[in-house]
Length: 556
Image (cartoon, rainbow, N blue to C red; front, top):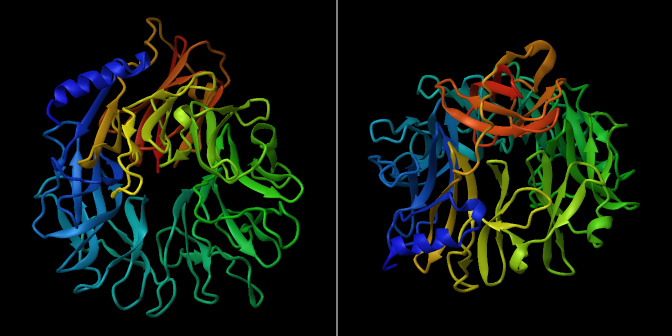
């Protein structure tokens, strides 16, 4: 591009007035080439991601939102494909493959001196890191590892070679136990992996010890109680339990729950009675979401068809929340549910129209409405994300792609960034907006600009302001007026108050004093997303009119 300064001036002037003061910046990692950044992950206030340095092998990159601070992470061994990036005490732990050690576990603070392999778990070129998932739990990072002797099993690390060890050999011997999802709930770590008796994917729980690592309700007599063999069981933490979808010979595929014990691992409700299934898994992105202390998920039966269901964790409290027929007629699968601004947004695919519709709801039938996507955009290309009380949605049509912004159900979609043209439907790489990720005070994403290819972008909203601190300060009673739950929290938490107020806000700061989230409060019970916030202790500074409360919140 001959005049990038002029381009950005025109770009920003073309944006909606609500974004007139926002900063939109592009990072051209490899000028004139396609970098295709991916796997964007917020780590210690900086963004780690992979990007192509040449035309073959992706490398690890870092960004602090500035030109000088956006670059390849230097290292001494040429490798490729850093995956499963995880925030561990402000450093990135990730899997990395090179020609000397194979795929192993690495750690980086973004500098050359601070980037190293933690341990050659599987000596030689064998893969010591298996799978694509990792999580930080009780001061360590857990992942699937293979030492070449015990097969793929559960491992953990504290970032040192000595502290990298196998937690439990899930299937004794050399057999592999593929680990898929991780989730923390009620102080326990849950994951799904193969069991040693039936070979099916089952729910496991661990407290970080060998003795405390158990396969939950693996068999019922000589038969498996259930299986989680579908690609995505969608493990979800809710009210100190874990919820997931599983298949059994008795009930078909339904929603199950577990408290970490065999007795407490059971079907929640047989939504489609008998052996037929009330839930179809597959590859649609349909993670259940928490809103107003209830869990919402997609399910259905032959009587009512496909709908949005809710549960309070009891069988009686598991029921239809939203009858989709009222809003869209023909029902297709729902996907990409996202909570933002105390509302649940999701999308419904209509196969008869080859179109996607956007639904916004407060969890009730009366509070549900359809939002029309602009410019005939029919495809959602990546998981939407909440940023500064707005929902950002990557969308596309046959001729253009864009990052859309929604404030509430009464507003029309705004273009949060440029409407990028699709150069050619068969062009490679595919032109789309991907990986919207909140990091520090910015929203990062990837998108193309011209024929050079896809690059990293940053949007920084400078318009949204937290509520101004009142002059008069009265202290709220932490024990009686303000409740934060669950605490520790994982994906989100709920703030509940018995105090009436007209204006409120909550600000989360980490142990360094850095503000990691600020959000307006407008209801006595409101769910707050923790996406993009690193695990650790936060201070929650709550203002309700002229009253203030400060509490601790543990983020897992």
